[in-house]
View 1 (tube, rainbow, N blue to C red):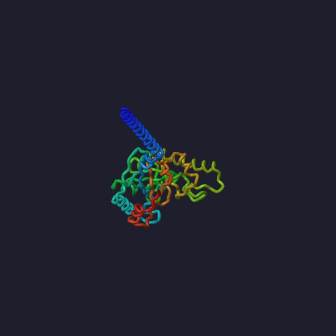
View 2 (view 1 turned 120 degrees about the horizontal axis):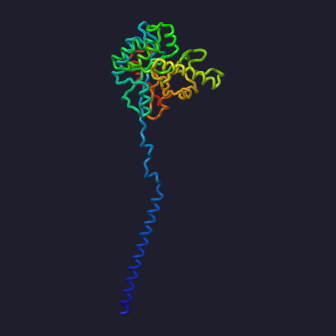
View 3 (view 1 turned 60 degrees about the vertical axis):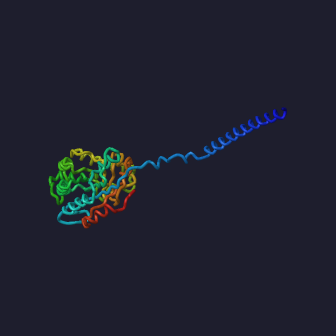
Length: 308
């Protein structure tokens, strides 16, 4: 009887002890697992958000013409036939001509752009740009930009010797008509700073103070902008550096004057990014040398150095 009681008690205590051991073991395992989880770096379970953000960008070649003359060819001169061959080749190779204002609006997220855009520019404002260029562009469905030196236009207006494709520059009335055609947009190329002396384009002179340089540049460019208003065309948002020359101070002065896009003569294909206005501040252009064939020009526009 006594032995049975002892066995019964022993069995109960063994069961209790076993239960206690199991509970303690479970708690220890839970604590170890929790500690392991806490020791794992949080970044192992997190996505890096920057890897998921893709900034949209486009390749943008810009071509630069000057004179269109049928009497000769040169580094800055093409014939009427060369111009038509170029425009036709652009379209054949999938390029779609756009205005610089279209590119600016795209950067601002206000519009879309074609898959393969190109900007066609003409510097200095020769009358032959519209005399030959507009009929060809209208026939092919192309548009382009003219960057006139407005003092040249002013001289043409005052002399009353205009509309000669061999030497005249575009007048105020012709600017307005070109704008109203929907084929031409205008950029700024200074009023009277397209010179080698006393300064090279808009370059700073030796010993010139910051204040004097800023004042000189500002006054000249504002005078040019006023002339576009006089002509009845939108005030340009694009500035083309005379001779492609710029100083370390010029960019900020131009941005302060309200320009959004700055055109150089450095030859590369541009990379323009949506939402990044700085990608408009040093745009390269390929000069259209009249000694080159249309095929050579196309090769440069498609396979030239790309600036990122």
